[in-house]
Amino acid sequence: MTRRDWMRSFSMISGAGIAAGLPEISSAEPTPAPPAASKGLSPLKITRVRAIMTAPQKTRLVVVKVETSEPGLYGLGCATYNQRPLPVVSAVTDYLEPFCRGRDANNIEDLWQNAYTSSYWRNGPVLNCALCGVEMALWDIKGKRAGMPVYELLGGKCRFAVDTYGHADGRDLKELEDSVKRLQAEGRRHIRIQMGGYGSSHLSKTADFREAGFGMPKDQHMDPLPYLKATPKMFEHIRATCGDDIELLHDVHERISPIDAIRLCKELERYRPFFIEDPLAPEDNGYFRNLRQQTLVPLAMGELFNSPHEWVDLIKDRLIDYIRVHSSQTGGFGVMRKIATLAEWFRVRTAWHGPPDLSPVGHAANAHLDLAIHNFGIQEGLKPSDALLEVFPGCPTIRNGYLYVNEAPGFGVDLNEEAAKKFPFPEHPGYWEPLRRRDGTAVRP
Image 1 (cartoon, rainbow, N blue to C red):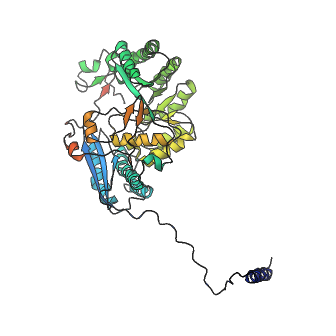
Image 2: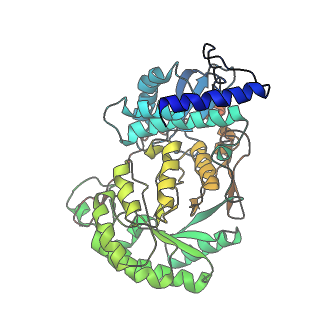
């Protein structure tokens, strides 16, 4: 159609419209402006960012409090790094506080992206924990402002509560059996079994490095052979005495060689473990392909990860079955959500790290995400002491093996700052003490 033909058609349509009593549109009249776009929430400025330190269960917890221009509105986020808490406090106080002050608390992703690169180098545990504390607090604020629990902001619940696993331990098989049965009586259906802690160091009798005066007298000792012999017997005993209806988990904690880890997983297949946790160190991620080809045992990995360079390939290549990163180490609640979304498309489920060295705010954040994602697997559960409940009112609670969140807006956990002052950090700074082989070689946790 030529321009002349188009104009003739337009004139005919216009004439018909006038004849029908419709108003004539003059070419000289300006076209009415479209309705103004919605401006969303009114600006909410960050006025102060603080790192609060407390240790009601002897673990060094760091919680970030973000205050806003709306009186009484603040958010809490977990920045806990038990082994290096003071550098995290400095990162929050000396760097993120001046960076965040005056910015809009509504724009969580924008603030995270810019804070993430503000240090230029990134993906380290100290800066990630500090950044998580701020970003998680902004999600808490978002939920409070919306009048909703955070899981509602993610689309609502996929399940009524969060299934958890408990920790059973014992220095011998009978002690361990009793520990498992106590958890079964509490309603636990998933139980992690360890005999004498990680690597069963009490099974290693001869520490030649001590006689040689190598290292420090208090350095611990663990050799792989006693552990490798005892672990299948542990599974066999618990299956025989506690039944086949419970799911059994076990944490290798990266303390054996990749070849030994492959051999152990193959031996444990007959006992149908729910998963074997951290069979390899992050430095040995390349061995996961060999491990996957050799065994059908479900594999869980990630509590030492800080960077997407560590978890992306394991997920996309389907080399693990459960991703169990530590929320504050990843850099934020939004990062965890992105990991879960990536993992869903590759049939990898979540089992977020949930130890005592994660604050109740971090545990609540884990649980809110667990409720809202389809590919939830299992959650390491929190057992708060009375002191922890005093400092952190609104903690998630466990009933019959399920974790329930406080349904208050945000993450539902508050912080009693006066109570927090009653529990200062222990004198010990928090680092892991050395663990050595018989000849003194360092063992990586």
